Amino acid sequence: MRPAGQTQPTRRVHLVQRVGGALALLGGLTAFVFVWQPWVSRDYEDSSAGCRPGTAEQTGLVTSLRLLLAGLAVAIVATVVAARAQHASPRPRR
Image (cartoon, rainbow, N blue to C red; front, side):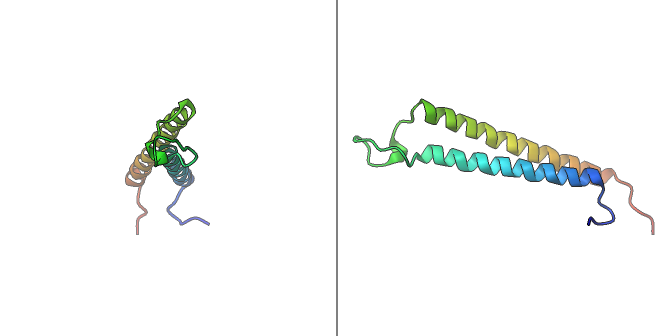
């Protein structure tokens, strides 16, 4: 059940905002894990984060950062669209 003033496009915009936020969160967490590299251990380094990443880790990090940026862009665009739609919608008369 939706509020009286909320239209179908507004519900879609909120869904897109949530999806964009989820993608950004997933990308950020994945990027953090690829920077931290808990699965790596080297003889010359006592911390896994200090080890040089391999090709797979570099690819994963770049992909997760792109996912983070794409999610942020989707969420921001959806927020701007929602704000414009709310501002432009006619208000009911009393």
